[in-house]
Length: 114
Length: 112
Image 1: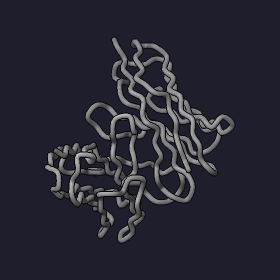
Image 2: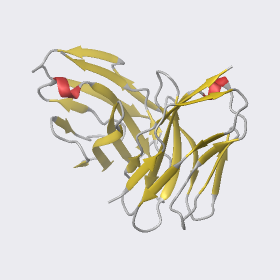
Image 3: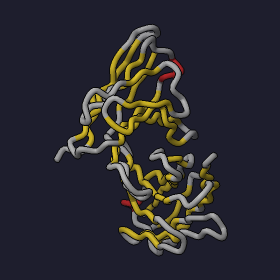
């Protein structure tokens, strides 16, 4: 199993450009989420999904869109990139059911917005 | 809402020293508690977890006990190695949702 995969690994954008960060998992997990990691801030939840066709906002959703058309994929779209979106982005997934289910993280996408 | 407060770093230790990283939390109900580790350039990996009061999670020589009376989940290891150098995150997951709330992370550096 590949687990959680993310592409690209690195990306540089100019202010105002749009792009999509890809996330896929092959564990048949219902729950998927996107976090951003900034120095001294820990990880903050951007958007999450509890199943195909269902998405909801996390702590810091502004400037990002998501969709969940399949169980496997959960892309994150930056509509008009801003320097404040320079960060490392992690996708995670977990099975549904029970409070102790482990979240599995992808390797991350390092995004720089100039 | 839920929150996690963990000891600020960086923490620098010599090999074979004893490690404690403090973590306290605020949550309603009975959350599950986690420690994740992030090695340089990588994503987060689950290190250990505990799902109810007085449970002890353990893995790779690390331990943490879920203390409801003090709302704490401190991470300990008796003898650290250079390979333990990483960022450690305390996290909780509570209520009917599946969202993780993270602390800000503690950078641990172990010198030979």
